[in-house]
Image 1 (cartoon, rainbow, N blue to C red):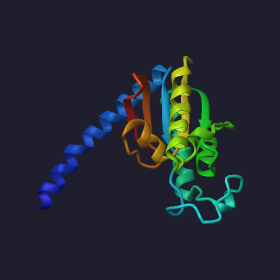
Image 2 (image 1 turned 90 degrees about the vertical axis):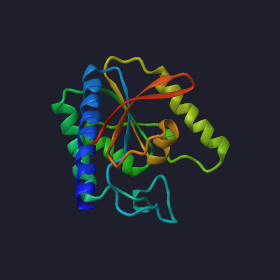
Image 3 (image 1 turned 180 degrees about the vertical axis):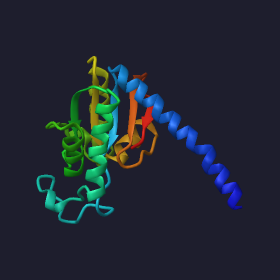
Length: 182
């Protein structure tokens, strides 16, 4: 059983590395949209007294998450993956990920906030994100720092904290071009 688990692990590692290499190749070329899940956080859910305008009432980046965000930025620089614009959810964990990684003040983009429970509001959020992605035509990359739920709804992919998913518009939705793990 241990041999089987080890063989399975070793079999999967090259796939992850290949996915990351392909993602970096796309980002070096520029002109792509990157959906970046915020870095590692403290806790598992926002407190009951959550207030979008107060970081003290939200889950925030852990010390490890701050290191991860710093690593994300260093790797974007080292891999010559140019970022033209950074949009972020208004949640502090996303804003801090963007600020640390890209060393710039991100543009607040409310549709990147956690998806609303109301189906009509959720649909409107997704439509606004898709509209922004479709409108992007820069020569460098657009980074959109958001949450797990948003990326799953947009791509069907469940990224880890701090993972990037490179996308392009396709039909009514998005096509995943690559992934980068940090």
